Length: 110
Image 1 (cartoon, rainbow, N blue to C red):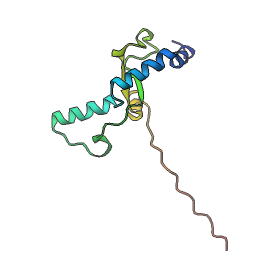
Image 2 (cartoon, rainbow, N blue to C red; image 1 turned 90 degrees about the vertical axis):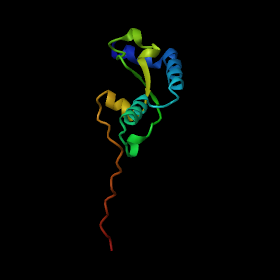
Image 3 (cartoon, helix red, strand yellow; image 1 turned 180 degrees about the horizontal axis):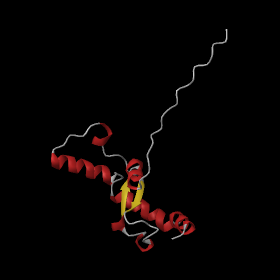
Image 4 (cartoon, rainbow, N blue to C red; image 1 turned 30 degrees about the vertical axis):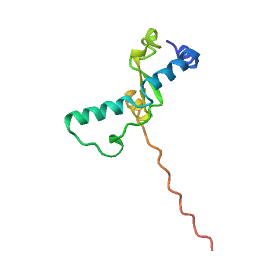
C-alpha cells in the first residue's frame, strides 16, 4: 500500500467502526500489558511500578502490518488493543517520556 492508501484506510468509516469494536472486545485494556502480567503470575515474578499495571488500550495495532497485508486490515484476528507505550515498542520507536525542562534561573536584576 502507498502512503496515500494507508491514510485513506485510516480515515475510512469502516476502520473507525472496527477500531471501536476491537477496543470494546479487549475491554479497552492493553493486551501486551495483560500478557506481561499473566506471564509474571505464571512464573511467580514480581513486577514493580508501571510494569505491574494494565494500561488503557487506546490504539489498535495490526499484528501483520497493513502495508504488507492490506487484505487483513479489518480482520479481528489481526487486531489488538495496545497502550501508546507498548505500541511504540512493537514498532521499534524510541518512546521518550515527556520531561519538563527546568526553568532557567534568571539573572537577578537589582
